[in-house]
Image (cartoon, rainbow, N blue to C red; front, side):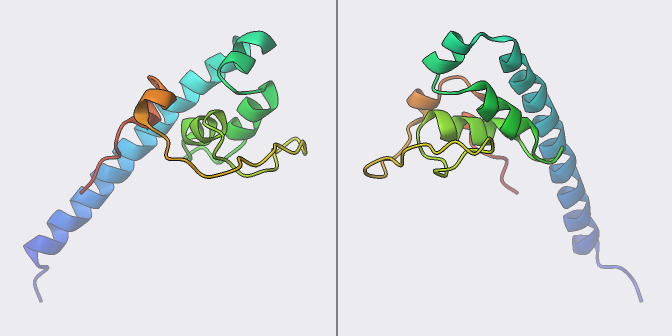
Amino acid sequence: MAIVPGFITALLLAAVKGVVQLHTAMANRRAAKELLNWDARALKDIGLTRGDVRGALAESLAADPTVSLSLIAAGRDVTTRRDGAVRPSPAKATAVSKDRLGNLPSAEPALCA
């Protein structure tokens, strides 16, 4: 029984996509760690706290912390932070534009296969 060439291609594409996503997550993790060097005032200016950054970095190594941080900064994250503080829920859900997210790498569209 021969392995179908389409199966091998699909398997290789899935592996490459996984490696690219992991590389992107690790690069974004390094960028998010830089936020720990910012003072509280600078973090407040972008809508974050030091606890938000630590919480995003506490996720698994494969997870992209900038996704969580961009949602928190845009006011679209869950109402409870990892440090136990309660963040008020937004009155209504609004669409988050790329302009509001700024230059975060996670603001770019994800790689589609």
